[in-house]
Length: 172
Image 1 (cartoon, rainbow, N blue to C red):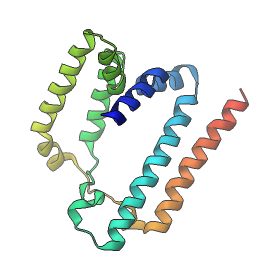
Image 2 (tube, rainbow, N blue to C red; image 1 turned 90 degrees about the vertical axis):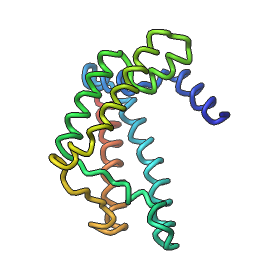
Image 3 (cartoon, rainbow, N blue to C red; image 1 turned 180 degrees about the horizontal axis):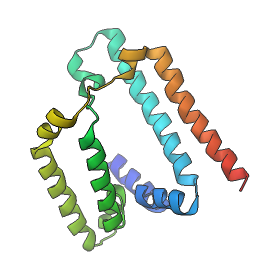
Image 4 (cartoon, rainbow, N blue to C red; image 1 turned 30 degrees about the horizontal axis):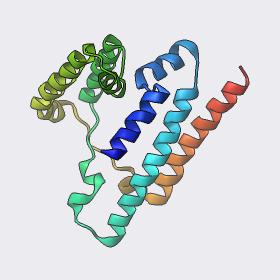
């Protein structure tokens, strides 16, 4: 509860929202949110990689491994992303922003929450059909490339993007 309250407070005070952050990047060229998102990916990915490596090295049960939950990309992923993005635009907020607005007392965003729950429930009912027809085989990079190369490529790409965006900001 305390951690959730602190996270909610920090998100609300910073006005954190994926929808507005992406809109600011694509429409106005503002990169602050994108750079923050890259840092968030670096920190969270490092934690997940340490967790996976620990489980792999200790021979823990595969049910605990995140790699066992890798989802196959496919047309369903693209279509779901487009629908989700349109929903964010129509709602005027991402899911995090919606929860913040509800916490601030906005009754309107309770309707948005109902839409998110209904859409997620409906999507889960026929997800297996989409996966069976349109999914590709899941690729777990450490299994394909090995951990050292995966770490170098992943963090190298994110570092490049972070510093490229920082340079772009200085030249404007």
